[in-house]
Length: 549
Image (tube, rainbow, N blue to C red):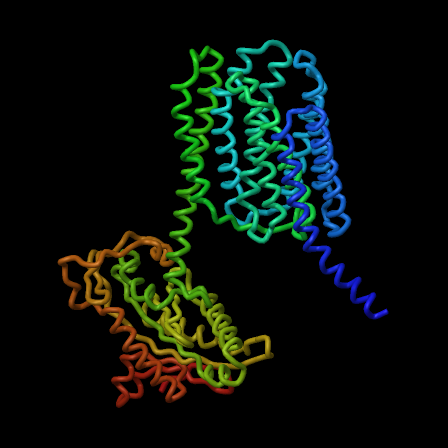
């Protein structure tokens, strides 16, 4: 009994590899048969067998994998049957009586295009979706332009009546199919083997159609069995795609990030080269040819210009985003240290003739919170503290995270207004911070440095270089501008550099922290022998009150 069960299990394990080995061999033999014999019965039998195999493989794949969106597979199976009927009728009915073969074939194309739209619609492209559609359309438009000159125009010139019009529809459908395939190829992920097999199948159909179109245009006259080989391969590839486990991804909701813009640009460049050569080729273009070619070429050029404009816009947005990231602290959204050092020069004209004050803010007790709850809670506290600072300062003030739990505010105000701003900033920390671990209470110490009045038209020293002052604009807006590195003009001696203000404010902040003063001006520290000249802000039970010492 145990030997019988083990034998059954071994057979099941062997069935999979044997099946995967025999299917390609059987497919290769069936594809090669039309090349070995021109017998109409053999060709028809092989075609019917391949269509039946394709439909059977699709049915097995749908039954085995249960895709959430099976409709594209049903449409592909129906299209294979329609294509098979169309090709069979084309081989059995004389050329003068073509009617139903085109009807079946065109219906098959309709099923393929509808299936492609069904599996492409749920694929939401993250960023650049319109650009991708534009690129795919440009590639299809370039193919249509070449098709008109080499296929459609000769077909219409050599044929008459409805048969010529129907024959001319195939190159148009092929251009549309190429557009859809291009869009699908770019949005496909590497893990979607089933979708890649479908792409190969559609490309094989396009190759076969190109041969049929050349035959219709009178350019070549190969045996029809040769043109049948790509179609047989295309049908079997559809069946193999249905058997692959990744067939369930077809038609599912997915977010795609296309990263092949350069490859699409290369294809578009080739299309433009072909388009530029099209008017020089062909035989005696008529008025209709000139109108159609000019219209398609104009559409292609307009599309390329639109693509270039969108590319420039993307580049500008990327530069602004990179500049923002370079000038801002990503945790708090405030300026970083390097942007703070450039702020006086960038806002020079707006701040000219006014006193520049720098407030250096340090959070008291932050280290204990960070050590007790971890860095994640510390970051949360820093972000909340920055939000409170941002709500307190004015629109024209500049706030920055200097590092760790240290913040800096630059403001153009007199001494009294600066003291009021410091009091408001300290009062902003009265209420506990509601963090994910609960309420956390901290306070702040502020050191204030007051600079000299800034003469109009002067320059400012930044890192040892003399730079010009840019035009007036909001403080944050100047961050996207570049600052020249050197000019021969020297900074005004009476002007206090931002480094001096930072050093003085930092010293005052440590003095305020040491004596629990709340805030203190740096220049008041020099008159400690004269208590009446010192004005500080003391804390008492997490509440603030103003006292004169």
